[in-house]
Image (cartoon, rainbow, N blue to C red):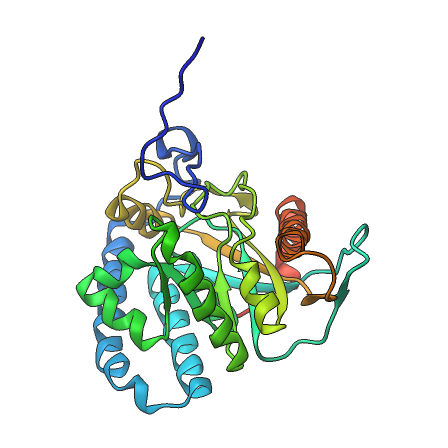
Length: 302
């Protein structure tokens, strides 16, 4: 009999992915020069520090203005890190889901995507004006805390299941206010070659707010080849992941945005959120198996 040890911190809301940098990350196809690496690090630091005074007065701006400022700042930071961002539009795939329907784009949307890297919230913010849902630990980092609060980030305690209803209510309130909230329902990061199942809890916020759900696929590439060099997984360190990104000469991330969908009121709540999670996950997976060269047909945004 084999006994598998599961760390005490791992819960249904905080799952554990099998990805590790030692097994998932390959050497860069093309390495950036030392001068370019240093320029990227210095440039990123300047953008981070430059965003602090803006973040400290962001409460004076309206939600739309704050979202646009965050979007431009995220684009500038990604550019400083040497990460190019392309945006594509995917097709709705609702076969086998009669209670779901595609709806026009609008305010108050729950944007859900696969989770690979610490770059993901920046990538989504650069692509679409939104408020990310992040783990509470982010709010404890001095510099990042100020920037996150300035961007309107919503925090969740993933290691406290008792705090989950409060987090769902917070997301629902933001959706009712017309905000677009981005969440990563896998609950953890994967390397990008594979992804985990979507946890249904956050989809309850969309049901409570009667908001649409918009799936999105994040896909990192080097020279049209899927790359795990941006990932932040397993025993990885944030510094190590940052250095991998800045040392990669050609890093491109493609975001495929699928049409928003809404669930018709029917069935039990737990069945409804599971249906939403299942359809959103299926949509996101189609973006991962699509041809990466098609990304160049999309719109470059950063």
